[in-house]
Image (tube, rainbow, N blue to C red):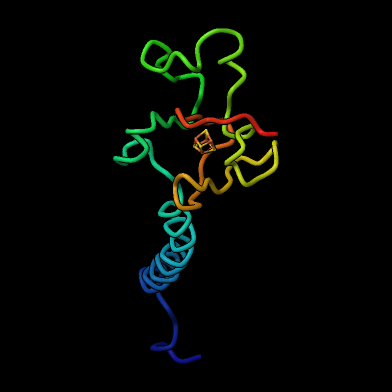
Length: 114
Ligand code: SF4
């Protein structure tokens, strides 16, 4: 191997950083797509519906429907509009154009699964 073919430590690190950056960029794409598909509590419709990712954080004074022992049993996973299984972490909800809501979430449209 010729002297100019020997890669010094700095060159090796530069290539490693570029490769790592590329891998990082590639791995961020699905996460970003998934994030765009998930309903955020900050969206206007979510706010209007009182949607929370964690149903236990719902303001039960503002939303008395979720107050008390009966209300505390309401979660997205047991709502009629949750298009998933009871143990799914996220599933589509028709109120949000079939974007993903949290199984442990809740909103004021909650309707018991039949
Ligand atoms: S409609 Fe049901 S599944 Fe959809 S966000 Fe509200 S409680 Fe969750």
